[in-house]
Amino acid sequence: MDQRPVKSVSFTYNLKVEARHIDTLMHVNNVVYLQWVNDISEKHWDILAKNGLKEKYVWVVLRHELDYLNEAVLGDELTLHTYIGESKGVKSVRHVEISKGETLLLKAASTWCLIDAKTLRPTRIKNDILDILNLD
Image (cartoon, rainbow, N blue to C red; front, side, top):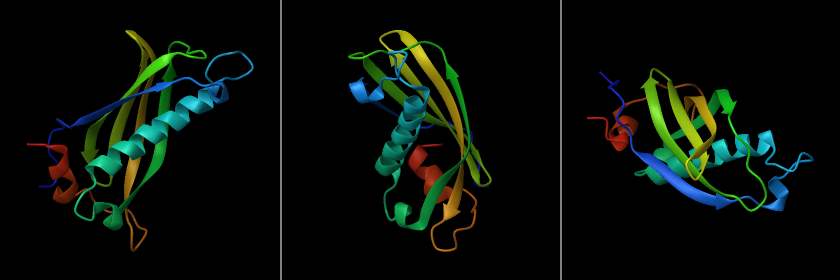
């Protein structure tokens, strides 16, 4: 069976809020947060995808759920953290949290669909991916 309980590896990095991230209300624009959710997801996949996985598969987003909890302003140092949740069938849920120190600014859950890079059709998540997530 290809599905196992999720105990996945996570990925974290830091960034500093720049002027280009700020909107007319003088805080980080909501669309920027969404871009950051996408960016950390792609960075994490790039780290995890070994042995030709990026040539075999492509992930596409089916759904984003974002909870905006607090704001960030110019110069803030932020921590972005992601981990993979439930993965079954062709879908996988990725969680992202963005924090400023101990303050949680954003929680996101994105549902991704695995696509076969050659056929461009959805494909089941198999052991070649599950194994890299350390899902023992």
